[in-house]
Length: 187
Image 1 (cartoon, one colour):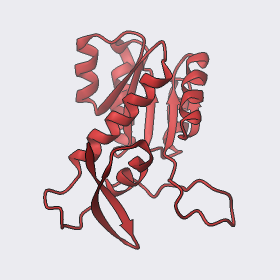
Image 2 (image 1 turned 45 degrees about the horizontal axis):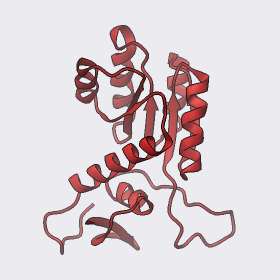
Image 3 (image 1 turned 180 degrees about the horizontal axis):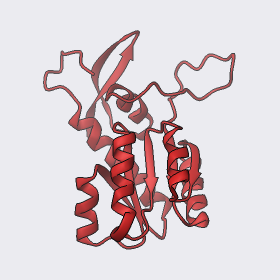
Image 4 (image 1 turned 90 degrees about the vertical axis):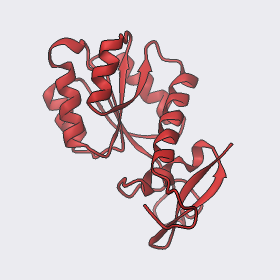
């Protein structure tokens, strides 16, 4: 099923209908008020035609979980620019990286877990937030949604499921930001 995509032509974004695929997601996010994205490639080489990579940070108290999720995302072409535990220092260092996507395991939703989501949403209002957890109950999901979380990743990780969750969440966001008039030029 085709979907509408924002493509940059010089400085003017325009919308066109394209087949839905993960390779077009970065341009959609860029047009949906995301910061300019770095392109794949090496210095001094023409990067035209290559898709920009999305900057991701992974925040989790368990180093093994951080490494597994990082591996899945890097292998899929995401630019994991940092990972940290859920300490305040770790959170602050990840915010400084200005990621487009944040994957966070808040630990126990009771206590400071939901406060971490509030902090991330305030510090990175344009970033996509994904809650990572081994156990998601309805109250936690509802509280997370109210705090700006757009997607949920369940442990133990399954690479295909994680990537499908990313893709569906990004496509949903892209559909929300597309203009009603196919001829309009909007961000």
